[in-house]
Image (cartoon, rainbow, N blue to C red; front, side, top):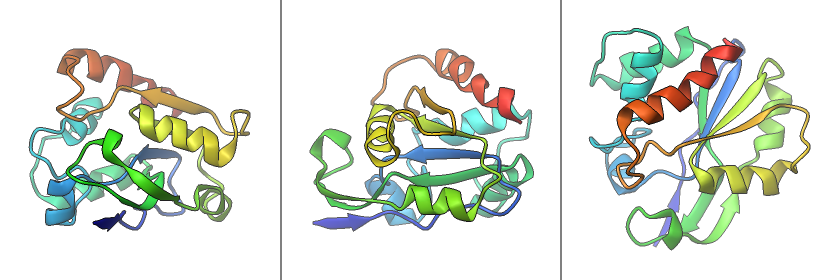
Amino acid sequence: MRISSFPPIIDTNSKILILGSIPGVKSLEKQQYYGHPQNKFWKIIFELFHEEFTEDYIERIAVLKKYHLALWDTIDSCERKGSLDSEIKNEEANQIAELLEEYPNIQAIFCNGGKSYKNLQKILGKNFKIPMNLLPSTSPLHTVSFEKKLEDWKKILEFI
């Protein structure tokens, strides 16, 4: 079955672009970025900025915008059974370069996991003018502790 990513969450104030690969099954069902209850993405973002955690998706998006974070995926569409990146086939890339042209305030890109990082390097090339950073995946399948993930994700704060 072919699946598609969501539109980017971005505005002219965005300074940091966070890229995943493509939404998993739960996210697609909910039509929300990082919709799986075990994914630590939202918990990490709220911890980084000392915000009170919420399940409300509208409020989550407001927190991203408050701290000038943009969110998108490296894959526009693909075929995949389940939610594993390793099951992705026949992928089509998102237009990352065009997005960065349209939003010149982006100062750094952070990839949520290895698949998005590899894809980004293919899309933009390894020597792109904006720093590209690999962060540990917030997926429950990436079994590093929450504390370790949070510590690595603090690198975002250097660009705020």
